[in-house]
Each structure stands twice: as structure tokens, then as C-alpha cells.
Length: 111
Length: 112
Image (cartoon, rainbow over all chains, first blue to last red; front, side):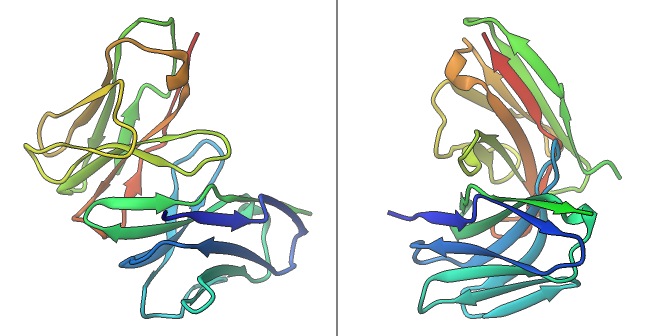
């Protein structure tokens, strides 16, 4: 069964610190993996996209990695800002129009 | 550009009532989607429309119907609301399959 598990469920960090969010998956096969940011009360917004053959993709302070051997993806946030407080969701496209969403990690950045 | 616009933003229904959630996009996208988001769970696909004139069931279609009115608009209808349909509903659109989906701001629906 295709599953996606994100950890931790929630995380509190101080402004300026780095953090790494994890996404473990059993989805196979998949065409691409996206990380989305979802602010409270808003819809998700795409941060990065990787195909199954890529292993890293950056977007400013956000860097996503993909390890097909361990079936893990990570999202690393550098020099966190208060505006990074949000939920971060990993999403797999399995072909056609079907996608599998993780439950998300809720990140709180404190001053 | 507004992107993806959903109405209403909030709604409270009594069990058995019906309502239609509206969604419109101004990006000339071919594909549109309806998802629901429940606490502790990932977004789940209710229905999608690959292109104007077509609709298909997603992962959790029971209790819902959809209409792709034209290329811009994709509505979701609850014929007889149930408390299990209390959720946040998101509409999204994309140019085609596997391309980036753009989401609306969501509709928070409570069925009592």
C-alpha cells in the first residue's frame, strides 16, 4: 500500500536556526515528489519539485533531498524566519491525476 | 490575477441540507480538483476534472457530486450533508497532470 509518513508532527525552533523535516514513503512507482508550504487558513503552495531520478532541489532557503534507497525525502530550511511558520507537506504524483499527500509537519518559528 | 477562488470561505450546515461549493480559476488551466483536508491526515482527492467536459472519481467520492461548468469553473455539491463531511475543502487547478497544482484558500464546512 502506498503510504507517506512525515516526521516530526510538529517542531518549534528559534528564528535563525536551521531545521530538517522528514518524509518516509513506500510509494512506488512515482513520477515526481513535491514539497508544499501551507500557511494557516490558506491553501498549499509548491516549494520544490523533484523527479524520481533527482536527489536534490533548492529554492532559496529551502532544499529538498530524495534518497531512493532509504525511501526518504527531507526538506531542509536554512536560517529560519518567522514567516516560515507553517505546515510543510510532501506529495507524490503516482501517475495520471492521482497524488498522495503526507499529513504534514507543523513548524513554529519563535523570535 | 486572482488564481483559484473558492466560495464560500465558511459554511455551517445542518445534517441533510444540501449546498454547492464554487471554484473558479483564471489561469486557463485544463485540470481542476477538489480535495478535503482533515486533522492529522493528508489531503484526499474527492473528484477531478482532467479537462473541460470530463470528471472522474478520486479517493473519497461518496456523498459528493461535481460539475465542470466550463474551463474556468468546477463546483462540488453535497446533496445531503452528513457530520462526516465536516472538513476543509480545497479546490485546485493545474495545466495538466503532474504539473504544479495551484490551490484556493479553502472552504471550512461544518455539518451539525
